[in-house]
Length: 203
Length: 129
Image (cartoon, each protein chain N blue to C red):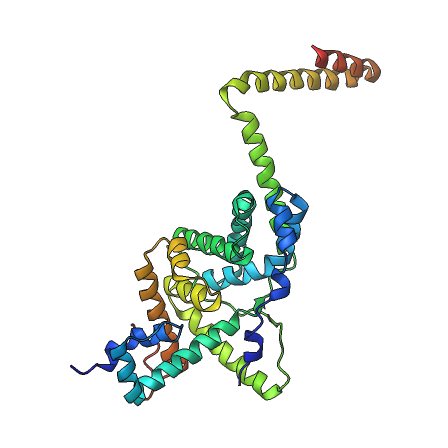
């Protein structure tokens, strides 16, 4: 009923850049700049979902591309460039959040969203949007360490091992956090009988 | 021993992500409506989360330009660093180069003030030393 049609095709066009990646790996600076332009919005989206506000997200993105630029010659072509960049971004965000722990910006502010695959049925679109807004709000309420894991696993499809490595935690800890995050989100978005209203409480 | 529903919560969340339920858990879920409902809700949640992937938040219009500027600046910084704290063997050479450059610049600057044409010649001669 939601925008399920959009799910089957993650932004293939934006990442269909193997020749640019190859050129950038061989030291072509222009190619790397093209990669930056092609991927900046996606990287920013992930960073924003992890750190929760525009200013920190921009810092994280900047740092991520700097590291990517320094490491691109070591990037192995057998991995997806997007996955590689997401891992770097996750790592930068974790570092950034660690640094920022004392003055935490925790809320994800409202952002204009661009829907790449608008569905034709306006009612379904409205319904999907309402659900999405509730999900975004629920994600914003999660503590950053829980949010990071569920965003990286369920939104960006990174394997548990990669998430654990980039966040500097064990795989078991990553799985425990993932379950806690999902449980909170599920209770808030799709409560079972008797669960209504418990979502906001401590878990 | 009967399986308790709340002991299964983590398995249900994992199952929504493709992990298989073990035999006991699977047998319990087959007969427990509440666990079936919970599993269905976890699956729904994971579907909605995946759908977020196709949504790109719009950064400020200058983000890509800012990134590229940042890369350039970092490049300049690291070039300056490698010049300044290069390997010991290269250090005297770099130092001599920097001194020569300074002398040339000083001479050129001073003579540009007096007589431009001659200043340029002096500058060139010094560089050759």
